[in-house]
Length: 260
Image 1: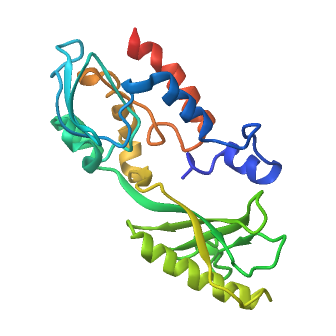
Image 2 (image 1 turned 90 degrees about the vertical axis):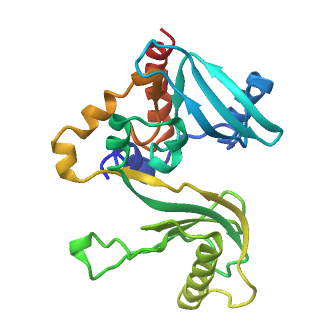
Image 3 (image 1 turned 135 degrees about the vertical axis):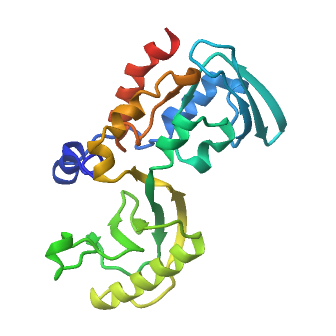
């Protein structure tokens, strides 16, 4: 939790954050794709892999399912940024050490939507809280909405939605629609029209975590010890946090160890 709700996150809520001049967070990835060209396999999945037992051994072979067929990729080292869960990394042929660590992770679900035709009054943000529950810091029961915020585009709102387990897109949409209808009645908005969905992104599995006992027993020290194990390296929110600057800085610091 402290990795997710840190100083950077709280300062952004209070003082505002920094974004690109064109307000396009996707642009840096589009530029990277242009640079990589056909070497980038997008919308693709590793379905099998053979990795060396120790660092510095033979090269890693990966069978990748792509929209254009199956490809064999042979590399010296692997850098993984996906959440390190058993379901995500099982195709890599995990050894006992890797599996014993990754199997301890639990996660939540997190979904971002862009909605329109809400009927909500203009100029307001809406945050879901549980006022009578000081013991749980007013955190609402899940699954449910975290917040609804206006965007820079008039009439378009962003919605954060969370759960304790994965949910279908239809389940989330249904609950968002029902919540917005209740809210606009309470907030004296317009009751006309149906909520429309104009954007969707799933960040599930989200906020990988382990019990406090595991942390005290050195879990994250052992997790960091996997860097370079079997010529495989890791970056991502499970290792450092969810914020873009932290992730870029962590990865930049890690790369010399990967390519050295």
